Length: 142
Image (cartoon, rainbow, N blue to C red; front, side, top):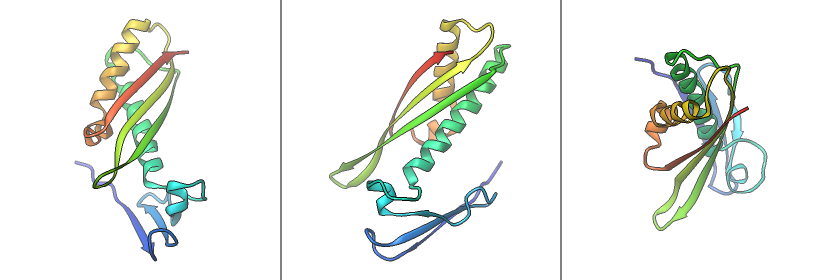
């Protein structure tokens, strides 16, 4: 079992307050986040962006593992995650994550790649934790 830790500090009200996000590895250390970064084009990060980074990274690693099980090795897997935050009657919710991946995989057929990419989309741990959201995938070989 692996337990990874991140923390957040928030000061002030929702719209004018500020926050800092940190990770145990120090990759993020007091990274600023706030309302403007989340709902406008302000500086800093936001939870949806961080979830997108986690999902893109998790999917890419899962795809690498699944390719290896099939006897294939990717030269490169380039994944972007688009995370949709929608206003609903009871507040906001992450309703969709759209994964876009382009991979260079010697000796992989398009059909095999699509099958393995979809298996990675379903099987990656971040996809599982986001099961309440619609998760879609556009996968292409370079």
